[in-house]
Image (cartoon, rainbow, N blue to C red; front, side, top):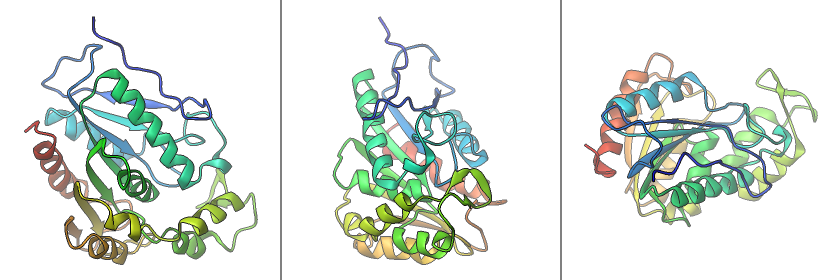
Length: 253
């Protein structure tokens, strides 16, 4: 009997809001796919960001199922935003992988945007269940990012103008502990794709170059000339770079 999609909870017992989209050429029933891509957001975001929906639909069209995830404290997931620090999200991702493994998924790719990219690097460096990794405008110098954009805020002030996302000292402290993910990048040996706009106003393009250098030049790199952090007007290029790459590595193409 096919098992239904499992419930996703983190180590704190908080329910994680997810959305599963089967591959368009597969059976949208209750059984697990052989391969799947986990899609995750950045700081102050959630699973229903337009770029995530676009990428999920493109993956489905190519026959690849996906699971969009809101980390705890974000979107409709349980938990407090003030506790949604990178280290906790790394644990959230581990719980997602646990549930997918129990469900019967055999091969898992991960694509994370911005802070979700840093979360992916931190997880993939020590978790071989991630078969291939995609960093979309991925954050590498985590502490520098939070210092640059949020250190001037008073505790509780809205981040990026979003009242539901109050600035928390816990975020600053966790970012300072992490510093940069270049050490973890050096430990990643699975296939890795970096996609970054060279006009990114939040996470500098240099972060992608530094990640690639730390990993010995192994990751593939797609540079998007003149494109910002949210890939404004560039989703066709993102899809063209990411979907065939994932399809090949998850042996679905």
